[in-house]
Image (cartoon, rainbow, N blue to C red; front, side, top):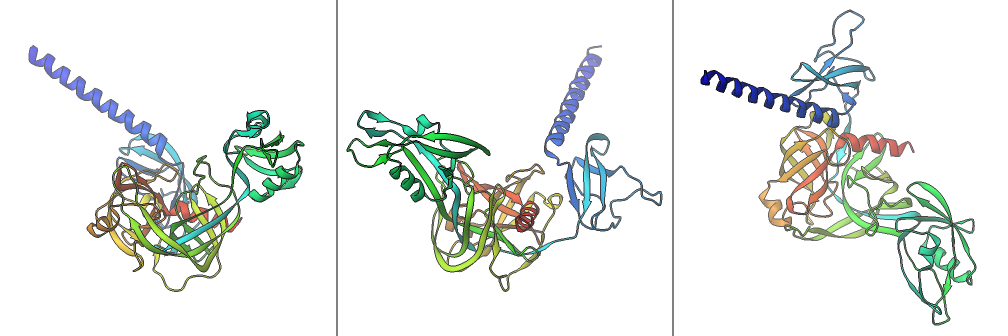
Length: 408
């Protein structure tokens, strides 16, 4: 009798664990698996176990579409994503698309951008005849605000704001401000400084930014170059810098500060005169610019679809010295079909790269990731606690964004 009770308890525990595992997989699948996927010659995407896509439609011949059925480009179907091939998780729209090819980057480039409007980095106290005051804060201005107009005139440079404040002679200035994408109307009254000289507003503002990154690819279809894999954000506010223009130029790596735990390293580069592209977009998925001319040469690779990226060996194509881009061994340790810029986790394995940089460093953002002869993505972030590891974004996502940027 005791043996029977023990067996029942063990079976109950086992079944409970199975139920917990199933519910965990269901929750993860519903949250992370996308509702839209692309395929090339395959009729259905191949998902990582334990998930699979199964067609829910019937063709006009009365036969089910199989995993190997060849369909025309642009064909859209509904598919059911199931757990263990049995339990429904969600439905997804499957679009048949033509395989895209791009020229792989790997070279470092310089970024010069100008803000659309003038960005408020912070507000501060100013010394006036009546003591310390903060006119900007009193007007309702906050860090991260974008000043686009003063007294009805557009402003895009710090010098324009400074001139308006100085010439106000203390009269209120009518500001048009953009905050979280919404327009605001504020009134700023500058105050004369304690020395009886210039009028002050207590504003720290920014109208441009510069830096280096790595080119992910050049797209021959849209004539757009893509890089970085993430947006350029203001160092004080953390907000994406809205742009009015800018350009992408050639750059040369001069050295590298090696990364260590808790202290990210950095590529050191200098801008060169050659202009590569006019800046089109500074967005969540990277920096995009319209090429002045298509680069000659370079390796052309197919772009992997999200569902073709796998955990396991891959290569990072990156420039870390004056000898140009080279391939280094990495391992993809995690793949997530969820959106954002953190679709993959990777770990540097190559001794030569570890010796030179200590792992992933600033300036390597945008470096192409290649697996099974296809461009699968780009490095976006380094783990501050471990420079050997970082995140990557899907190349498919960046290519979609590049073509959207080209279309305006």
